[in-house]
Image (cartoon, rainbow, N blue to C red):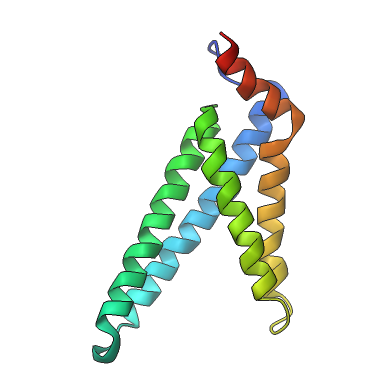
Length: 131
């Protein structure tokens, strides 16, 4: 049994799938933050610390939005859609060498966008505001 206003069925499956993929993206950003911090040298302390903080903020934001969209909070879909569109632009910039990098960045973004913009999800999240 689901609580009122919470997506169920296909919409719930799609939202949880998107949230799982975005959680992995957030984890990736967290790992990149740690790697960046470990690579800080005396010549680039400001850049290294700044990049580390930025990556941690992105990781936390993605994780937070993923957790909220998984339970059907409609506001969380917008930042996740924006993040996936940015990720597609990033994949476009990384096309070429190595050949696997652009698809590795783009594929999860496309899957998340398909899940978040699917008609059952749109209906379920729109119904939440109809009450």
